[in-house]
Image (tube, rainbow, N blue to C red; front, side, top):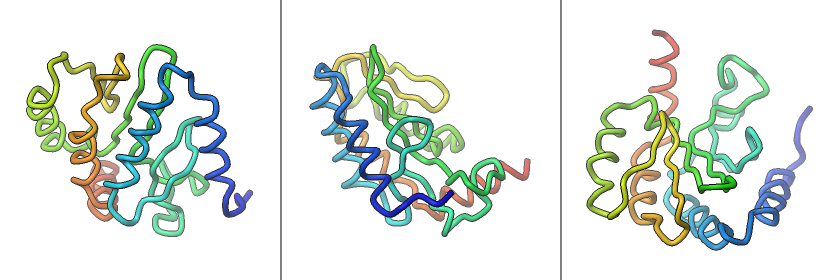
Length: 155
């Protein structure tokens, strides 16, 4: 089923409307930072229940994990019950980018990095390194991400 133009923004706006008050301002600011810094070639969509920046199927028709109806995810942002999360698939797949972020984080924050494989968690809405997140978002182009994904897929 094809989504109509504008459905994605409607879904994202609905998500924003439902973000808990505690997280809302920080989440909106985080989304603005991603919007301002993400390279051309990514599209905003709702994926896995959260606003996500993806490689559109028109650009990468193979889809994520070979699913022809699922755009290739890159970055997702979510307001969870206990934290705001940034899911960065590129950082998960590229050790050099991950190492850069882990090294750079203490230069921007006085809190310990709270991170999973691709998930950065912020438990205090007043302590989010927006400048660092903006820089992280800008470091990988859509073509870079497709090439890295293709390389990992072949292994």
